[in-house]
Length: 302
Image 1 (cartoon, helix red, strand yellow):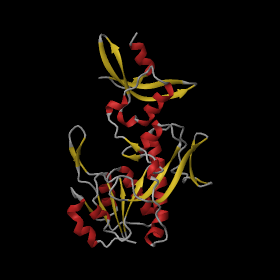
Image 2: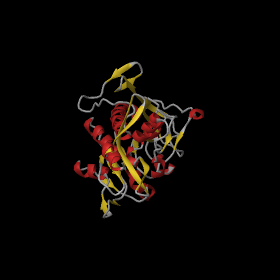
Image 3: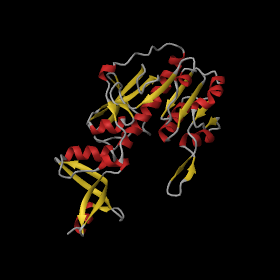
Image 4: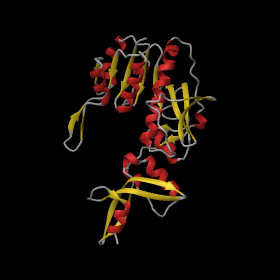
């Protein structure tokens, strides 16, 4: 089986590692160019490039995938695999492989199409979460489904469900998650599921033994791209909804505003819990200060 892998961030590198463990190695890796990062804006290689170098696999970093269409055509690939590549691929590129291009998406499509499926599922308090592998077409998360697997929260534990049969994660990767988990925790479990599922179905997909099924587009829902302006917490609002928001948008910087010494300051929320119907904020970062406990913060306001 010959395939090219498109991906850029750490979750894509994790999928590559799972495929590698299963003996599935791409002939070429396509990732985004090194970008300036951090306060010093130092040009930094993406995690997928670092993975490719560590495993001595050829890689390329075009600004546009169309720029290397000839090189991609020469790979004579059975399939392309796309995981969080970060750039739109044209139909010209997607149609090059004999069996098309497959994408990993972190929801049970057609629900939660778009840029933020994990965060949106937590915000919606939707515990029927899972992953989909679909054939990419010219529309976002629109192509037919090749395989899906649900990851449900049962008795405050994260388990993998395949129809009625429970299949546990490997002991070294399994985590017990309280609902609602932080988005990065849920994404980590979903990524493990996605990698295992992809490695299971790839041989049969390439052999033509799996038929992709069209989505029910009438049931599609769409997610938004979040920004820091979405992360303000109104402490007078519903406690559970606030907790969902803190967990879902933890990476974006959930915060509230407080008045101190005649000025309004921003207070970042680092951790919280929901107990007995109440939101308990545990750790905060007041504007211009170091992280402290919420109790310390309240004492400083008296």
